[in-house]
Length: 258
Image (cartoon, rainbow, N blue to C red; front, side, top):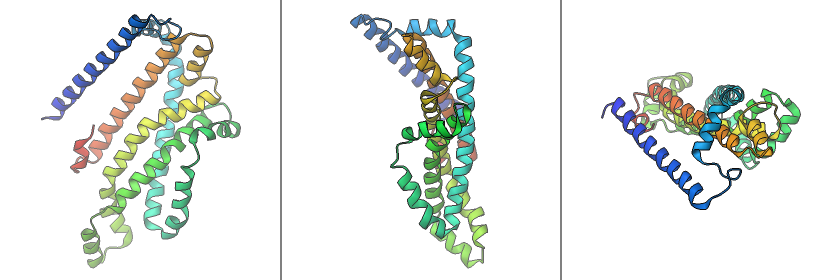
């Protein structure tokens, strides 16, 4: 099956799944007679989205900027950390236990502290997105670097390759598929971090708009904002998947994922 045929097949399946979900949603609203301020139907949400497209787009641009900056910075820092762990035994002894221990602290609990330190602007939201994706990128890339074929490592040493050359020409290519998996995870988690930061304290963004709509019992506007956020997250995941697949097109592992 060609790449275009796979794309069309996946798009068809996604549209079918979305249609079934919307039908169940509307059916639940009709069957239960739930008030619109508790659960608006999909048509009402779509109407609200169209009517408030300018407002939602203005807040969405802020959230998108926070997510993209956090994703890029987090990916770069995560990749640099994984490479450093690979070449430095001291860093592995000291930094790895600290990073593992840090995952025991709920990231959500750090949002108020980051807001206190960095303010209500974009900086605290970018930091939240960065923190929530940093460990997945580090752990997946580091595991990929370690999984390099031992036979190739031994052959490189026999031929006199320096550790730097071994890292650059053997370990790094071998770790790229795992790095791509980490980036796909980061693309899913980054919007969560940004929105959590906006919930704690912000004056703009989709998370802020959702809180504002919820406080005014405008549930349809809240659902419309949530729909835009979800659509952006899916689009970001798809773009990152395409980029990572091209980056590792030589690897069999990369052809088996979206």
